[in-house]
Image (cartoon, chains in turn orange, green):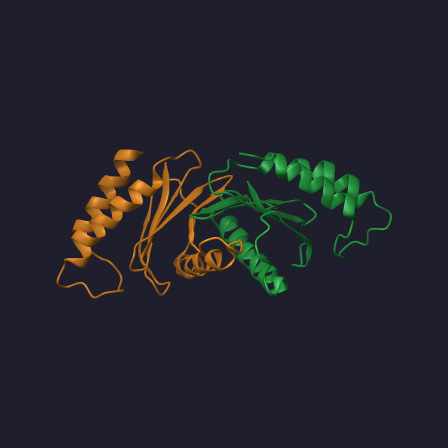
Length: 134
Length: 138
């Protein structure tokens, strides 16, 4: 069961968000804060790596009530999925969403980089992707 | 395989630090400890926000990166037990609870010379903790 899906660009701005039934009540300022917080946490988790290990940002946050999977593309765009704790294959779904992002958003000539995503085609594909797995 | 172990109190003071990897120590461990605490504080409040019901102690338990996994247990008194391990390690909440209830309670709380909010200097505590952490193979 999925709760939320977000896309955060490389400077920490939330460019796409999707709520599914059962998610926590978050208003728009919470969501904007979430984008910035997640970017900061991703960077910090790389900085606090134990000495001698390769620095890498966080991939998954586990809690009693949810699991948050964060997939970072090579360009720094983060695809975050919040689901219930028993979900598996979250990274695969985030990678699929990245594929749809490059197909429906980046290849769209009207899309300006790092701006909000408002495309029906992309919405449709994301809906299909997360509805099937529910 | 456990890499590092920290104990923080609720205001962010690092009460204990143990490095099990034997790698070269950082030039300034206090900076890193402050960073770790700040990051965990943010992570905990973010997780509280996403919880469906109001909780007193944050439900955040762990996060994974490519090179390590961080496990945390926050007690109701505000103590944070933080463990950096290999990324494939399973959920360690039970072992952190054991460390708190058995090793910490016996060798720190019941030690009459221990001053609260100060660094833990007990050699026996360090020894027992190290012994236990080395048994956590997987």
